[in-house]
Length: 300
Image (cartoon, rainbow, N blue to C red; front, side):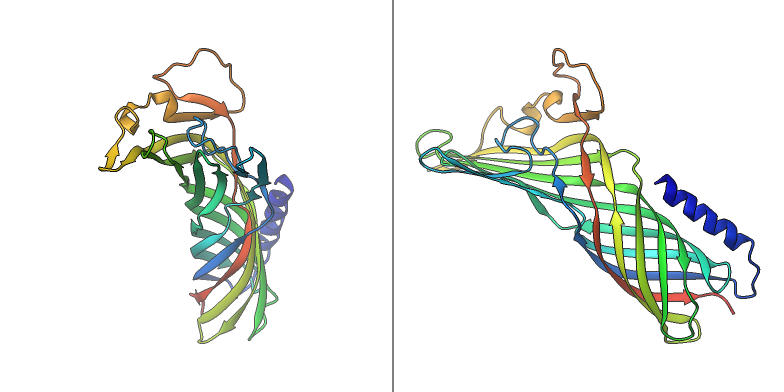
């Protein structure tokens, strides 16, 4: 990260010292889609152990008691995005940008359990706003004009959403099935990644250009805190579905609904009225994909 920052500062210094009559402002807007890139272990979606899901695993328990265990690895970097970028060209070849990207990730299974006693699944997705300061480089061809941009990727707002569900046949006795549903939101600490793109622009007017690009991003988001926002336990009886008394969100103590991620902490007696401290986790949001849209220049 320090090397990337040094390179960006060096290019900015060179650009600032270059004089040209081709200086101009521009704005670029578009839409895109990202695929996940690489793979790491997913977050622990159930610190309370309510769904019996083990972190980042897909487990099937056979009738004879044997288990098939599959590792679930990947990223949460796949999904749709929209972006608006403001830029300034110091000369025909070098510019600086400040981009704002809104990302709505695709829901991905991060844990599963299938046994005769319980079927559980946890799914997660990211949504948020990223800020990207970057350097823009181009040979300044008159028609089909290639370019490259590289910069930092800084999450400015957003959350990780985790939806969990567990179904226990006859969990409440013969003929009474129990279903547990929970929704958790995870807040992040300040994190920095980097992103870059290779693309082309094509003029469709004196100041208007179409653009298309392939983009990559490398981003790991450090978790700060988590809170269970929704929690409901229902029993499905022959007479109908009812809420199970004592097993709703309002019945859970704070140390089972609020969690604080720490790099280091001292573990002692649990305080039911305080957030529970758990080891720091990271959300892998890396990916690669494409963007397309229009660019409008304000120069002469």
